[in-house]
Length: 92
Image (cartoon, rainbow, N blue to C red; front, side, top):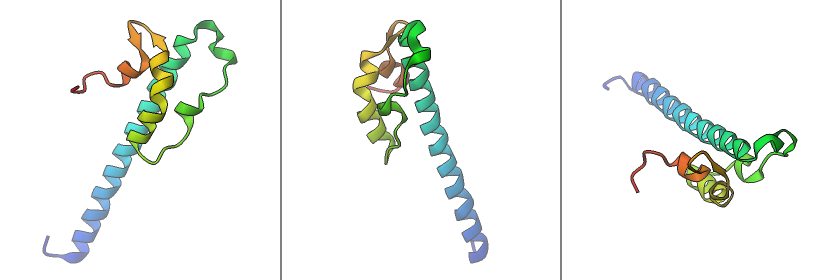
């Protein structure tokens, strides 16, 4: 872009879009993990306290995945564990 002012605006918008996409990915992963974990607890889920491994903020997606993996692999819902549900469709 020849115009530096326009370049700055475009760069800012692109960074905003990337930030929003990362935030959406983080929230959707947490929401899915929370739902699967709650379903795995059966009827008793209404009395449960939030799971710190799922709810705590993390510095990165990878940090959150590593921290929540032990809890989610122990939580079974449907035909598999909750951790596998989060990785559906990803290459191994």
